[in-house]
Length: 122
Image 1: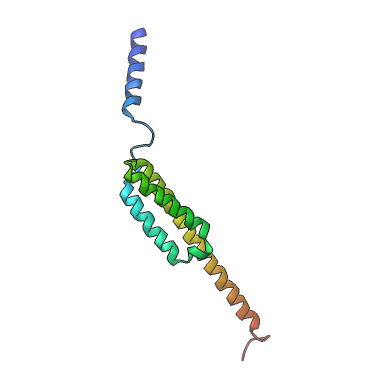
Image 2 (image 1 turned 60 degrees about the vertical axis):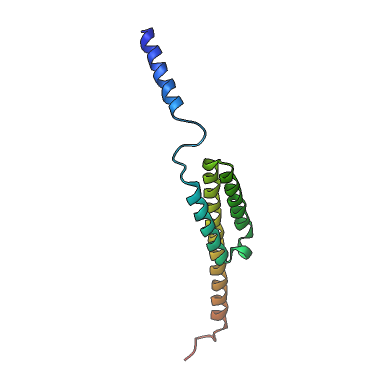
């Protein structure tokens, strides 16, 4: 009975040791994530995030800079995670910018509607 327990503990320990540490191996490619984050940040800027979502855009840019620095220090898993955070921040910044544009368009449409004469034009 002791031998089977010892064998079970040895198998579990071997499995844990071979699993690696810190980040899972499925984190992904740092270069691809950084490239995608750069594209998403550019898209957010084009959508007007620099003015209507400045904080989210700044966070995306900070995370991207950290990802690039980590990649250079050979911390590729951490670089990938930071790049993915930059991607998420950039998508959020773009969504905020698009929402601000939609709200402006709605306000303009309401103003135009209010300016119509009662009963409409005939």
